Length: 177
Image (cartoon, rainbow, N blue to C red; front, side, top):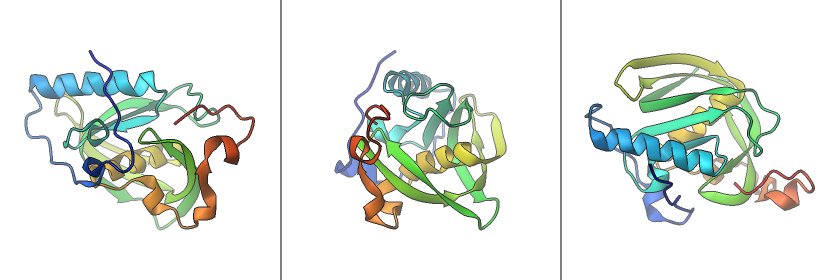
């Protein structure tokens, strides 16, 4: 359909909580999901939330197969997750490097729950209920944060671990976020 412009950190629309989806059969929702997928793929993203393209709805999608931005992570299946609810599987927290299409060219060391259960709905309104760990859990938490007006730099504990990708990881060719 269309590749949409991704809002950048500083845009006030990224700081607003998104509204739940109510009509799963709408043409607008179907178009939004296609546009989000096309936009994410065009930018080598691991995920994208509707607020990142200026749409205030609780819709995220994520997928990692082979991604030059995250060359050493496990695969994450393409998932459209609507009206998500996250529940930590334990108190275990892991720190990991994250980037974001709304914070291009930068990475930060972000604490996240090591495992989460996520519940919600797919694009057709069918229920989703999964428990995941590792990078999959990190991606889900990152994307759902966008639905609550939270960008990953807000979660960084030590700003010495936040900076430009080419400075933090010289020679690794991780591309722009």
